Image 1 (cartoon, one colour):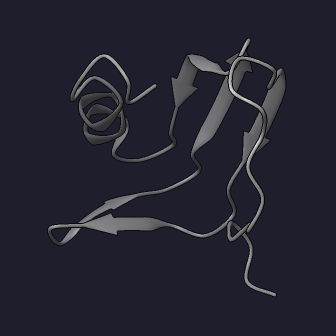
Image 2: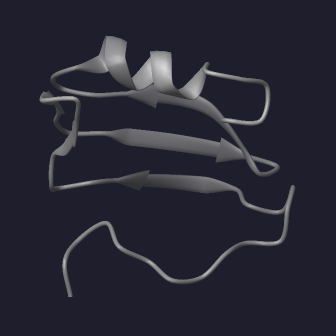
Amino acid sequence: MPDGEIYTSPVEESLNGWIRFAFPAIRNQQEVVGVELTFKEGRVVEAGADKGEGLLLQMLDVDNGAR
């Protein structure tokens, strides 16, 4: 199974913990590598990437519900 794909969904506001993705994410020919997200009560409270962190943060801040 490819890393980063999951077919379940947490109960809203119940997710706590972190995840790190080994495969890069590509959007509009821009690569984001080494994504790590930390969740608290269903919301991303910390986000980082080894490469393309600016794009990652931009996507998380696209609207109030994106995180």
